[in-house]
Amino acid sequence: MRPRLEAIAGPLEGATFALSDEVSIGHDPCSSIAIPDDTLAALHCAVRKQDNRFQIQVPEESGVVLVNGLPVSSRLLEDGDEIKIGTSVFILLFSDTGSDAPLATTDLELPKGSTQIRLRRERLQGLRLVERQNLLVL
Image (cartoon, rainbow, N blue to C red; front, side, top):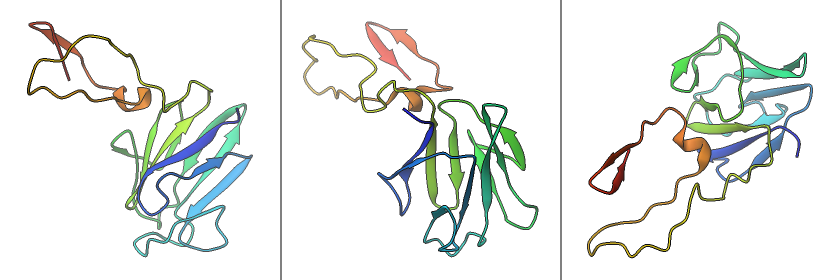
């Protein structure tokens, strides 16, 4: 599958956008990815293909774009990076490793009162897992 941005939060949540050589992102309806968010600049940022990699570039006057929680003006992107633009959050995916597939499944009986959660693989990036008394703690 082609590299893509999956919107996981914000007004475009659930949408997937294939990446081409250049993708403009902003609130301008002419943007490749037009986000209905008045806090964004008309052209808030762009994702450009550069030597088989993708780079995000943010014009000085645009405002803030966060990649994995850190503000950026220009950065080469990696598979699984989380990109926050205004109220929207996107995950960059290069591979076909199904993002909706759970990380693991189990047939174990859960103790009464406990909760089972499923996390998408890209949401685990940067988390530290610790095993405590037969429990996996984030």
